[in-house]
View 1 (cartoon, rainbow, N blue to C red):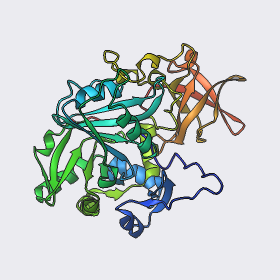
View 2 (view 1 turned 180 degrees about the vertical axis):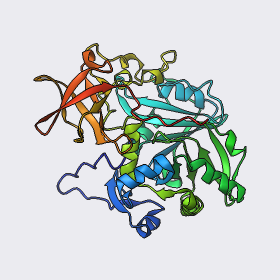
View 3 (view 1 turned 90 degrees about the horizontal axis):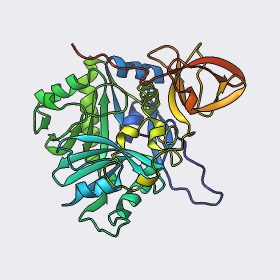
View 4 (view 1 turned 60 degrees about the horizontal axis):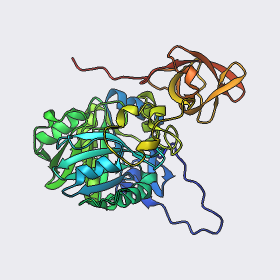
Length: 392
């Protein structure tokens, strides 16, 4: 998925009218909390409140509450919703039970990645597709166009852009479950089934203070956590409730800069860095997402060239972190490029993602990264860099 802290907005052409940035329904709460903001995809979103490091550690040790209301929510509903998604996305949805979530890909005709998505099945004939904020128009347009398949078949389904009527608040970290449990005990959050039955990559209907919401056990940090989809006017109530109830547990507001270092430690790709229209799924380690037993847009071009670069993890020596665009070297020869990198707050050393030539993907392979003219010894690593401890 994508992250505002890491993907700047391209400047408009001279003379082009620039629309004022949109504000989240939680904007006033962010201002009151002292947030610094970043402009991404036409939204003003909080990048940090105190410090990136403190918020990162809070998510790993307790929990952080994130405003993700910039994300795009797309409704897919109708008798042929599953058949439509099988044809429109690189996944298989016919056997997906109600209440499940699935990570998927929206591909171009040539097999390149238009966006990565999370798809929730909320009822027999109803799905929620969550796309990246910067790709909202691309995703909505592509899905609406694919209601009529290349074969000429027209699916009995409706695709709606529900982004403007949906807000998203996430709580991520070891204290997330306890915080939501406390809200259930207080009778403010009322799930249709017991919250402790909600497993990872599941979603359920609930109400919060009497208004309907969706609660999903999904996230983008490598920690346990929940995402709450709600009407925009309810978002401030949910935000305040999570922070107030979680205060004694160490729960804090967290900005999108910490979200980027959290997802990097967890080895999760970021659209615009590890994923784009030139990338085929297998290059980015996402071959498992593609259901080749279905016929979908982009299927014929999904296989990468034999010499196509492959995404790997890299652990670096010292304290200097690589950034996107830094060369990966074997001696004097450039064999790849960094796509994301940071000094890992949890691990205490720099980590990076990079695309490298196929012959350099074996974990333990020694390489060097050119960090502004300094050659830093580095080692190829498998993903994730960080894995949370299992309970018990």
